[in-house]
Image (cartoon, rainbow, N blue to C red; front, side, top):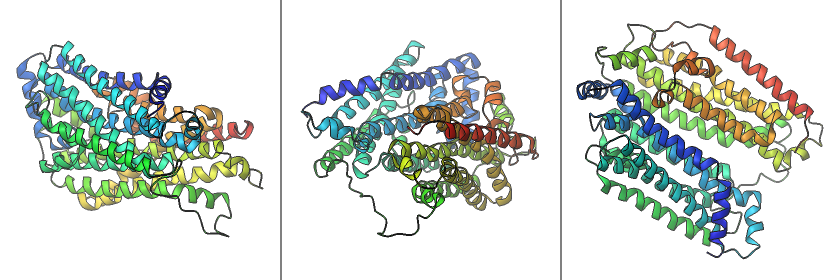
Length: 523
């Protein structure tokens, strides 16, 4: 453990901007939603009617969870808790991997290790900072709810639930960082755990099989039921997973070489003739990412499609229910199932926007590792190299949406309509790909930051998370592509105008980015 405190201070310095921002985001999601509901529902009768309407809407129940308390605080937790848990889990995974596996991959851990630094110092410092951050996030969330005059026990239970899911995925991230040799693969493993956890919770609330929550880290925080039963004992499972994850991570760290993982990278066959072109090399580098996303979206499509047939129809009476139908349907004849299917496809599109960004960041990784410079010494132009990866970024994002639409439509009983809804999402996803190319071409050193900022902007200001913090819909309408798509699944007529504009915008961004790449230095 020698050098742990020094490395802790180093990590704190590196996280001095990122960590306060995501903590502020989570606290704002909680307090902002509560404040919005206080304005919208001034009486107990009003919030009680709202709670009954939402509890009867199984489509929203699958997304947000069960309604445990028909109060302002209880409904605010119902609305935003799952979003907070998911965002926090993702941030924790990225933070842990960034300060452990990424440090080994770049060689910085070996450089630091040449000084008086113990073998476990880097992992310990990372766990200290990450754990303290999630506990602080939970504490500030509780304080924010208390400041608004809500029940003390319920507020503390909500804060504990937030911290619990963060601690659980700190353990998951610590193990993932020991298993692989690359940070990308470690994040991928952690994302698989997160995806499975979310799906189990989603299916549990959508189908009514509540037992599934007991095998989901996110489900454990839901089972706390803040402002309801306040069952804090469930969080012992989160603490247990945190401790188990750390025990496994330390054991693996003690038994492996620096820079290596339990799952070794497989070198290609000696004398291979398969990598004869940039597109072949790009496929070799991108195939793991594409395969994982494709399988994940296929499974998601099957799960969400199977749930669609069990979604009961609800009356369109009540302001909240009418708002839901106005937002996700384009015809008065649309059913609850239609709204559910469109909401699912829209959500899959928002998440799929991350795929081309991550795929294109491979270009920057190849550049910083020196591989691009070696490749460009051959008769391969910069544009040919970049376009080879762009093919998989854009083609891959289209493929995963098609797979999701096909599998979901097959089980939902509306294959053609659902597949059409999935295809409509593709131009919106491609806009993010264009931003990724632009960032890589003009601002290579900030490409990762710009890509993640674009993804977060689209999700935070879009119709998925925007309403949670009271963001006006006009911002989403003019600056986020997804709300402008024709609702072909829920009663809307197809119009090529919005997709065509998005494709033209994508092309312009790509041209600008490739022009910048052609003129700048390889750094």
